[in-house]
Image (cartoon, rainbow, N blue to C red; front, side, top):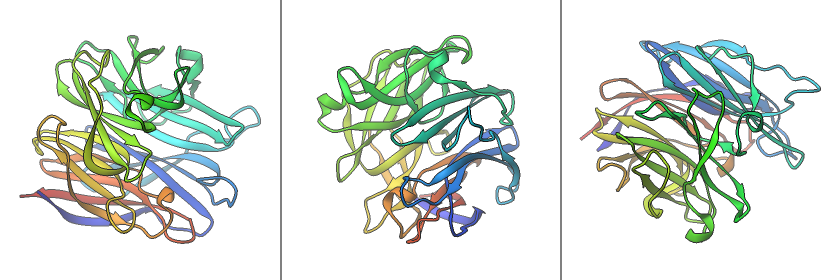
Length: 334
């Protein structure tokens, strides 16, 4: 398999001094929704300051034309001052989640969750107010066959102070969350594992790809056959990078993943493919590359537009550390 690029286009164009980043996508029937984070470049704060969550929409038939719905949450003395994350999820039709984070190192790292019938969300709740476990969210909220919701994240635990992947679950459509499992043990693997996302294998089975913080940054895989209660021992894959976001795809006969690619001479955004239920992952090709810092680009997400036609969104950066958000329509060819 290899990538066939149909079209690349800017969604949030590069502007000196602005830091556009962390786009995620959901599809609701024929409507596309994208959330991302936009802030100001800072020499002292990673990923900039004064971040806000922005919301955009587009028609599935025209994924290169986006309408802005403005910022979702306004700054306030009691509220957020620097949004960092903007993770949209649509585990079922008419149920939308948005995970955000108010971040200022080392003062604040507060995770919020919003939910509603559409992505135009105005209310949010501290995760610690509705969950028995704090976690930094990453990856889409997924729904089990029985109707439970699963939310990937990572956090420090008493026996894993440097952080490790965890899974939260909800049995009441996201009103409350509980700790379900430790997805992998960073201490046991011998490297710090953090961000991950889930791919469905059907029934109560799931595959996961995990970020590894040790060069050359091979992603790890693990799987569960009891809706995330227990997980197999993590194993290295051949994909090298960060921030894996999995898409289940029948037309690809398996799963796709978009990730920050670190296998080449410079960083980029790549697509990987597994056609054997998440056991082996192959790098299909590069969507785009960038010349700035590794950590100022590369996060992305993707949805399926029609059979063997996909939209990816991601952010890129050059040497002045003012990233922009780009879209790319592509297909897979034998």
